Image 1 (tube, rainbow, N blue to C red):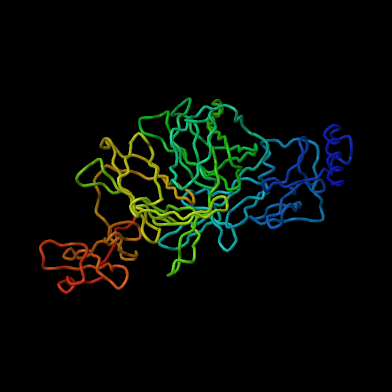
Image 2 (cartoon, one colour; image 1 turned 90 degrees about the vertical axis):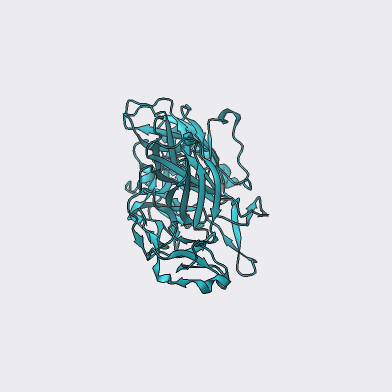
Length: 500
């Protein structure tokens, strides 16, 4: 207690006298959100070697050393003492991000500067592989990783833009399961702010106060509820046809962001155009598990969902009806456990109403969801929806998928033109989903011989996909056990439409 009192007195003296006292250069450094921080009027420094930066070591709480980043590895010199010196960090110096290094903690990726870890290619997702940070995606059930798209951006108490104004209205955003307790949105932000999980990739439909087809958004900054600024977060902007003042903004919300009200600022390529600001409210994720094992006593942790691919199907009888085959990971289709406030709740979910929800943008389509189905593996999410009017031209759209464990987004295209010749491949896994042979990429399985049909046959456990033919005029895709004797089958004929 006496030590803390002495430190407080020293800090007060330093603030009053600035650099007049030598002791001020040794003011105590602390770690705030993983970044070295000093009292107001002082900045972290390594006076003996200015090429190094005071860095909070990932593996040791509140341990600060003078380091530099070399190929995403920290090179530290414990012989050099970090200190707080009088002065201000220039917002353009990038001092906080220059030695920022990604690291893993509790299977999540953070930056040593307190900034935002992200994948510059949005087809990849942040992940920890054997406790090492990486950017990965799943391709044909194989993990494909690329560290060259992993980056740490920003992380600073200094603002490079003015966040005070509210120029952007958030019209819509992710949908959340009813089992989730949503945060309270301040009255002043109701109807103009969005809501998002921390650590998610969330999409919002927004209106700009000034729209101009000649200018483009070049970066997005975030400022959280404790005034911490995350510079150049990963984002995409999707234009909405015939609505130049509306955009679909997809943001990667940092894992280390403080909960509550978050300001976002869009900066443009035309320097004469001021940035435009909006608000979202960020809240924390609960812990979600499902029963595992034969007796259902063990529990498996559910992570945030991942979208690998979105395939659009058109209804042959109606130009207003579509289907989406969304392939990925961690979709929730059945019952689960959710832990909030140290209390575990069991959520009983009907199979026809899974707690994997979907929001489709733009909302000008007025999409009406008519069916949602999730496979037992949690890797396939099928959605059917209708729109008000038939499309007159191809449309860029965005889908946001949310579960109790997180949310993610993906840009896709709805095409109105005729399909070309389909290429079939035989190297994709085929399973029976809703009694229909379904490929792992979400496509309907086919047979390479037109005289055969892809069917699901009864098995000892799950149904078995096969290619069969029968003498019956009406050919079903699913058969009872007594009908199998009338079939001639060849599973080697099974094939899948190739990815576009």
